Image 1 (tube, rainbow, N blue to C red):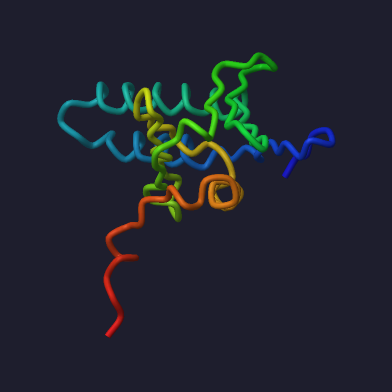
Image 2: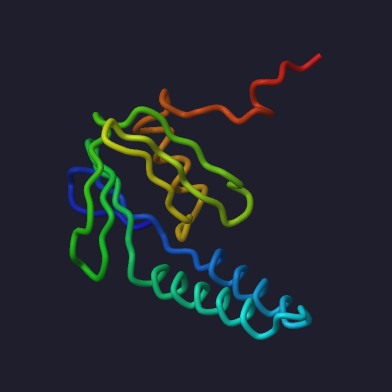
Length: 139
């Protein structure tokens, strides 16, 4: 985990697992009768995500969730505007869902999922939407 200056901002480690999994999926589609279009389409998408996994950075500050690309700030999401969040398929290369006052967002997890989950729980843990299996009482 990378740390920045004294205001305790943290940049998450990159993880190309999701694009590599999608690339493997595209290869498994070769035997389909519509070959090569599904393979090409999903393969190109995996290359796009792979490039994104190396050019994007996620930073957590005390007040904001910031998305950077090649050193330029793309978007800042202040935690005070968040209404809810959830990680879908966190053990796989999953998806981060979060809702702000203005709109909902879905982001592929191109970063270390454990670091992401830890930072989200630290900064906005009370806004986590529990998964259905978490809400089932144990007998």
